[in-house]
Length: 77
Image 1: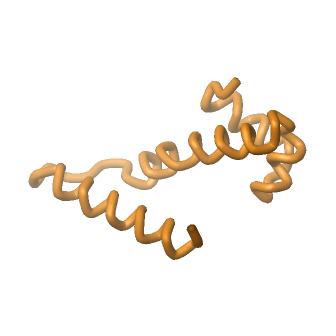
Image 2: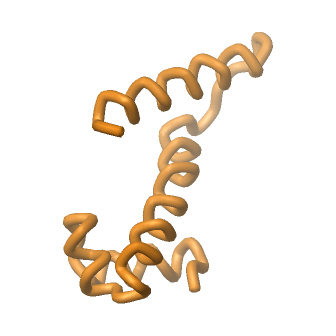
């Protein structure tokens, strides 16, 4: 999978989201999408890195302290 495949998946999910609204106005879309994507991204990367936060942070391109805050925010163990 490449970046374009991810973009296609996100667009397809957003298409479905707007269809499912059935005329209701969307609300806080940005935060909803980020929280839906960010938690599994962090979980998967931490698992891939064998639980090593320094390695995971490097893979993600984040500062280790930023990753730690996000791990706490999402209650990732």
